[in-house]
Image (cartoon, rainbow, N blue to C red; front, side, top):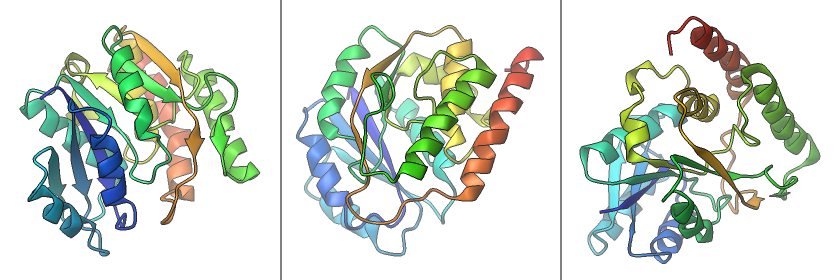
Length: 237
């Protein structure tokens, strides 16, 4: 066991088998953990059927829709309970290109956190409406301004952590659960002095299904950066 790709799901029946196949084709080093929040569309049932013939696929079934951040924390705990050395975050909807996984894994041989970055080399986003693109790009600028964190894409969700990084973070103290979870994890890694590298990616809007973005998630992201800054200044993180 070397690399675990954690994919949270909620109603991803249309994508799940395709994304699993695409990930596993990249390298024999990759295994997958699906963290499913009791999807009404039967996503977990498809994964369970696949597990009968594919030992590299693992599944955590949760009682209900509990949020993106807690899904990743559950996945991190699973990874740390095993012997995985590289732990990835990835979406199920093909907005993150599975072909970038080996590239990110190679970068992680010498870096502590590797981020698949939409904004490292310009703006590399396909099929988003202009308002959403400006919201995302503006949020990245806002986060950098408030936190002083030198990350071009602090809200992105395509990442690879080395094991020792996650072991050093108190997962019980995580404040965020929506997309601000990504900001918080980056910030906690950065203030600990770990090496972060951004690898340019092309982000493509989901092939099928519905986006999980909401106004509540945006509001949480706006507020959490101030909490993180305050707690850091007080020496509490």
